[in-house]
Length: 303
Image (tube, rainbow, N blue to C red; front, side, top):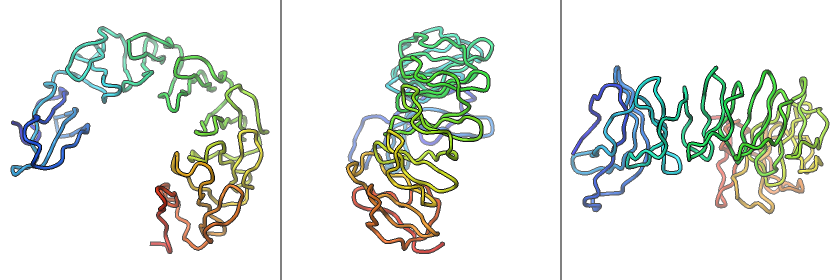
């Protein structure tokens, strides 16, 4: 049994709690990173608080130069600096060997990697290169989409590596729930759908990365925020100082939406009706004024 973190050089591995007696308290699963003067430990552990404190034992002995977090039950590891990567399961068995890359992101449906010439592409969970390393920069896949960059312009691919939007825009913001993209051209933003069809003109300020009610997106026009639908029509007019995010899946039909106007926050529905008066202080805390399970945190004054 191991207690605490032992100095193990710069190698990385994982640790696990023994099954044993579960009567001494709850058990949790998490990944941890501990930084010391000369020690970097990265791994995964089950732990519980027993009479002697935190106890654990190694799941995978420290043996890697670097290791990514697990995703989909697997992780990318590199045994020697500058050497190839392997894809291993939680028992340390190699599912993919000798994958040549300068860097691989944490395992996902598609992981991005850096190849020759510092160009980037995508590899799947079988080790198949889905998108060859031909881009200057790529992002992780989020909600089924990834951003790829070439020169000063960007485009979008899906999780199968297929082009969604061509490389022709200066910047992108994906709007979850509306399947729209905020795209920048010049110093203004507009909105396009997944078929690269413009649904608005390029007249907007930079959109926030808010989570919006399904089928809508926040648009900022001359410093004021409103909600657009998937066809570019106003659902809520651009008359608010700020529109707060909603919790995904929460009351999708007609959620209460936190909005700030003239320094006060209230809640409106998708028809613009005030359902809770404008009486709260308007902080810019990202998780405030979001209903979840019928409750929302609010502030009555500046703390």
